[in-house]
Length: 68
Image (cartoon, rainbow, N blue to C red):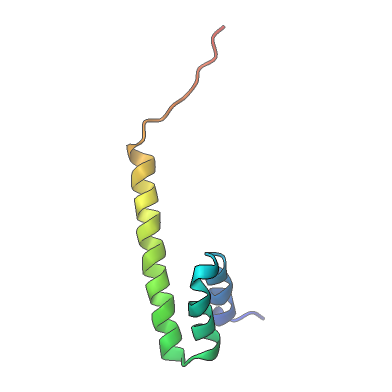
């Protein structure tokens, strides 16, 4: 069975090599430090997702209609 720690490591890994230090901190460092890294990453991801949603909602939807 995969624990929450392994799942979190895998999810962090998906966001690229610039988060390797957070993965290393989670795997090798004290648990509290790992939790702090994970919280910071989650906050950054949430801000990025929110910004992406704002962009999607403010862009006009371009739908091409076929001419018959």
